[in-house]
Length: 170
Image (tube, rainbow, N blue to C red; front, side, top):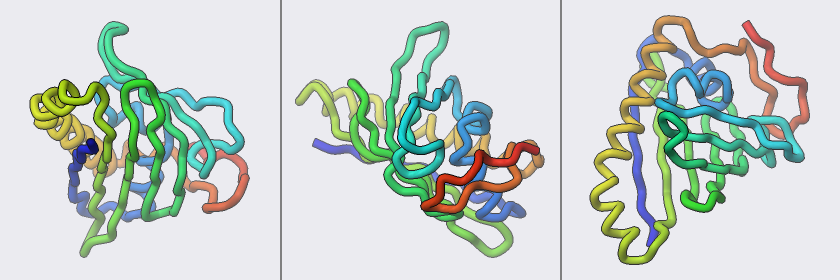
């Protein structure tokens, strides 16, 4: 069975390009994803390009879970999609940026395949509100950091479909 968790935040005064840059940069993600450390994994392409791999550990004091992912779509400044292929989290993660009048809207959706059969479905009923709140809190933090100018950490991203040099740090 699959389950969907999604959250959005409106970010006035911030372009879709700036928001997208902060979404796909692992160093920036660590600043707005709550209790999460990201690790690029050796792969055929650099993060955030299609084919790149990343691992994210979410937890406190060494207690948490590891989410491993492969980038399947990189469409700046609109959409970044990862296939979640870890032991616990499986499915698709989608980060979408939509321009709005005077800013942008950032949406993060996780379409997950629930583990553990009936127990996983029951666990999701209990855990979904927590997951929803966590995604929302992360996106609100992202919005604050974007509006304050603390993010993005890079001035430009490589275009889609290239093996361009790494992003240029500010």
